[in-house]
Length: 72
Figure 1 (spheres, rainbow, N blue to C red):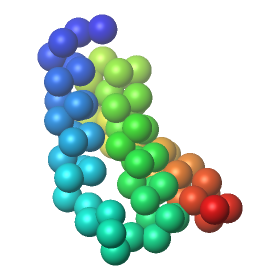
Figure 2: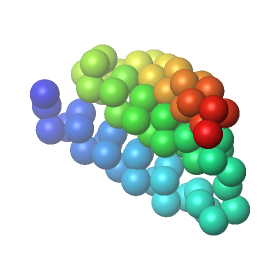
Figure 3: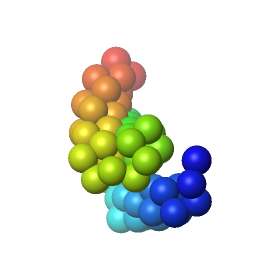
Figure 4: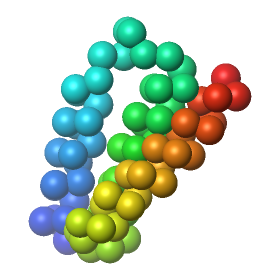
């Protein structure tokens, strides 16, 4: 894995989690945000930093996180 791929993915994850106010979010919203962050990093790693892979991974991760959070 290349360092120039990993650094933007980590920064994206930190920015996404830093912007959210966790205190006012439901469990489902927290799960969706976490899933989107993890999916974005995974998509960036798999596609070697491709924008579509990062955005697609974040979208898919957000949907999965939302569904997991619904069961809590």
